[in-house]
Length: 276
View (cartoon, rainbow, N blue to C red):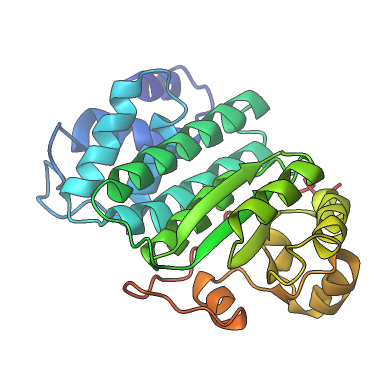
């Protein structure tokens, strides 16, 4: 294996890359969900290492193999999106912050994870849709770069029976027009840092002056982790509620979930220094 050869030459090796490489070369074979040597189920940590390696690889077959094996092990697509993919994104961010991978690698990896979320969600939507559920709009303002969380949260809302629309980087006026046309039951904003706060505030002001003024507005995402700042965020953005939990968001807006209760999606942390 490449990493073992690097060790023999006395060169430093990224421990995560080494673990994933060994898992791919020795532990896993197509269609397997157990360690070929011990027969034990593959650990969660190994799955995350496998995903972090596969989603930085240019070979799409490698990504499909790992995702397929995770699903074959009995993991539900909703759990794969809400846990495995979120934790893989967080690991990529940590590796970049530690200078273990390049910015290009973490960006490309995140984009591939994002596309996988969209693909898995679309596949599940084709099997069911509760058109009578709450219709909501999830917005990622133009200044927001961390989009993976938006798709993860969108999938969680769909699991609760919501009809979800997603708007990425659209101008405030375009979002207002969409809100007036669709009469959404809720509009949510997902942001990871303070960089997009002004954009959210601008959109909220326009919505308040339109025929969609009564639509409940919710702010979520990584920026909401510190509850001590919630009052400040409410004042700065003008939204009605702050939460990153889909279940709580529906309750705060007086809406009812029509499907099984979805767990709160875990938010992938942005790399250190990304708020600057």
